[in-house]
Length: 307
Image (cartoon, rainbow, N blue to C red; front, side, top):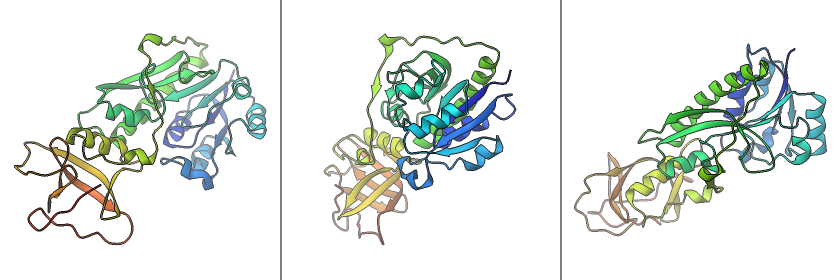
């Protein structure tokens, strides 16, 4: 018997999950996603029209998971399983009841660690050494359902949001293919999460990318790497203009300057060198908001402060 599925999501991970259905023997009948005019909800939004067409799935666009029209559309697709991958909204009791115990969620963390929001950013900011992608049975809690699949991998010392995101996409492809094969042969074994190991990650917004120059160069560098593409970036202001920082590196050993946190030390061909609360950081890739660049000088030509 061919199993039928519905996928709910609106980002790159959703596209990866859809592509995993190619050649799986499953019938992916419906993809539920956001309308393009609501793409700002996700910094990594992907229009799934083409991917859905390639697997023969109908596309249903909605802004609310639990709206009666959304629930009716999913129910009409008669899925055996629903996969929620790359979707920030809570799935309510009525939605979960469409396929009881068979709504499979995805989380980019080694559950039960880092349940909640912004797991990729928190993985870097906490200097995690190992992470994993997780497929789990969705219920009323926060990412706490029994695990169906996990794929572990190491975190590189200079991991960025983009490189970690890419690792998760590779892991997700593997997990979805494994899960589809297992479920198709009737293997529905789930592993209960260890509550003693559970931690929770709080929501992050673009405003959380604001740099506090009183922190150490190491802490600021982690924020830069955690906030970069595909996310909005870490930022500061210089003379009222927003400076978004995409790449940085703590300078070791530090140069023999006496300066306050946030003070620009050098502006040269190697980038911007800035004093922090502990150590110095070199900024090698950045962009300005608006037109032009405010005048900045090296410490020898005058002082410039970042706030």
